[in-house]
Image (cartoon, rainbow, N blue to C red; front, side, top):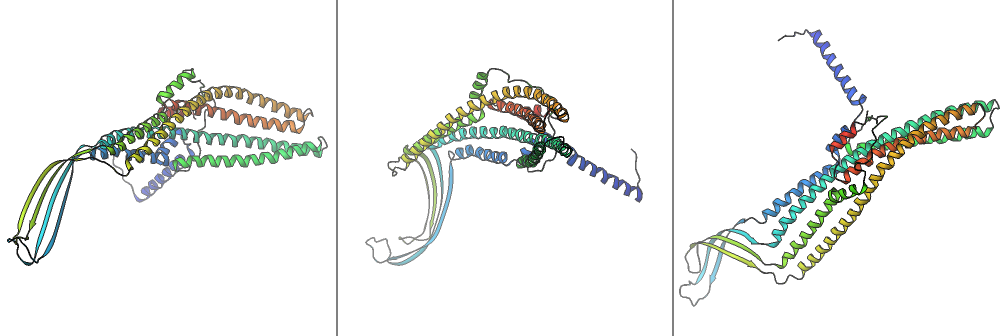
Length: 454
C-alpha cells in the first residue's frame, strides 16, 4: 500500500485544490443542474405541511384501537387514608362503652380491581376504533396521491409559465423590431401614420404582457416553494416529442366502474359512514345494563375505638356488580338523536363524493382525449402560423400587408405556441387524474412521467 508524504507547500496546494473542487461541485449541483420532478417530490414528501399533518393524524388514530382495548381490560386502583379521631362520650346505655374523652389514630389502605364483564359501549367502541383506523389509512393514502398530483401540477405550472415568458419575450422582440422598421418607413413616407400607431400600441401591450408573464412565473415558483419549503431554480423541461396515447381501456364506462369500486376518496367516505353508525350503537348502549367483576382488599389499623381498645382488620371482597340505568334526564336519548343526524350527514357526503368521483373521472377521461386532439391540431397550427408570419413580414416590405396584419400574425403565433405547450401539460395531468380516480396513482406513475423530461 503506497504511503504519501506531504511537505507544508504540498499540503497547502492540496488543501486549496480540495476547496476548489468542493466549490465547483456545490456550484454545479446547487445552480447548474436542473431539478427533476422526482427531486421536487422527494423534497415535498419531507416538507409538505399537508402530508406531514395527514401523517401525524394517521399515527394518532392508530392509538384508538389500543385505547378501546384498554377500556376492556381490568383496572387496579389503590387508596389510603390516615387521620386522628377525637371522641367525647357523654353517656351511654351500653356498659362496655367508657365515659369521657378519647382520641386515637386510624389508618386505612385499600386495593380495588375492576374487570368489565359486559359493557356494550366498549364492544362497539372497539369496532368503531377499527373502522376509524381504516378510514384514517384511506385518508393518508389519499393525501399521498394528492401530493403526487400537486407536485406534477406545480411542476407543470412552472414549465407553462416559463414557456409563456419565452414566447411573449420572442413576440416582444419581434414587435420591437417591427416598430423600429415602421418608424423608419414612416420617416421615409412609405407607410401612413396609422401603421406606426398600430405598431406603437402593440409594443406597449406586449411589454405589459412580458411583465405579467414574469409575475406568473414568480408565482409558479412560489407554488413549488409552498410544498417543498425550498427555492428551486431551473426545472427540467418536457421533451420536444413525447409519446401520446389515449386512455387504456378506451371505454369510459370501464373507468367509471373501476372508480366506483376503487376510488380512495370514495372508500374514505364509506368508512366514515361506518364510523358514524358505530357511534350510534355506542351511544345507544347508555340504555343497557353493565356488569363488572369487582374485587377489593382493605386493611384498617385503628389504635383505639369506642370500646377503648385498638384493632387491625383486613377485609377481602369479591362481587359481581350490575348497574341498570333507569333515568338520566334524557341525555342518552339526545346524544343518540344527534349521532343519527351525524350518520345522515356522513351518508349524504358519501352520495356527494360518489357524484363527484363520477364527474371527475369523466372529466379526466375526456380531458385526455381532448388534449390529444388539441396537441395534434395545435402542433400543425404553430407551423402554419410561422409560415403565415413569414409571408406577411415579406408582404409588408413590399406593401401587400399593413402593419396591423404583421402584428396580429406575431400575436397569433405566440398564443398558438402557448396553447400548444399548455395542451401537452394538460394531457399529462389529466392522465394522472384519471389514474388517481381508480386508485392507480403511485410513485411508479411519477417515475414514468419523469422519463418524459429532459
